[in-house]
Image (cartoon, rainbow, N blue to C red; front, side, top):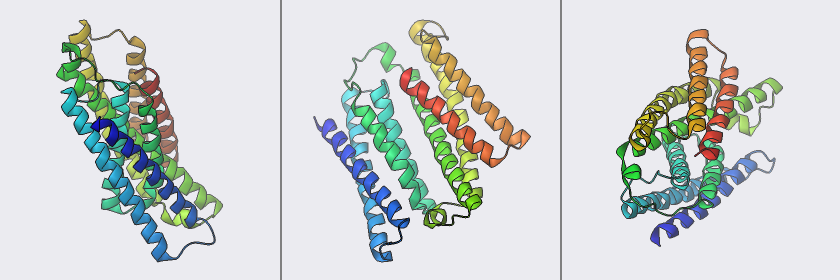
Length: 273
């Protein structure tokens, strides 16, 4: 099947892209750094390979949409695959706007691992029925996954912030320090990503309740544990936003909370889907 071919091609390209990004990162931290021309060429190759994977991934999703006749987000395989596609899209947007190449060393491994996870999940196209074809399900899942993507960006920005701050405190002003964005910029990314993710999560919960009403006749559906934990994550990020905007929490604390929140989001996404 053509969709399977493009999916496997995407796995190959993301794997190769991950290796190239990590290789360039390790080159930059060794004393025997290759000359600038070689390093620049290898960086461009990593972006080209990743771009090739993004194209094949887009084709795989488009074929899935055409063959199934529905938004391909009705099961965990499709949701994880879309998540992987979306964070790579974010990488290209940031790369072309800010030229922060090192972001690929954080995003590509995550995208590749996500796609590996998706490949291990059942990927049969479900039978079309009123429950799966209902618009509220597609809207709910799309908003929820996009919210997770935003929290992923906050998570990555939090990790980069803590790394950069550690380099500054220990006075290890190495090549990685030079390539990481300034602390203020990383903190702004963290804040902006959470500000974007919170309304998406809110709308995802609301549309999920509407879908539950349609499918099961109750706004509080059968999977009460997932809904309860989703509300818990919602309150967690509400607290983070309140602390950042009203209380004035320090950037370091916000970075740590972004990492903790992401772990909770992924737990709900994977174990209770």
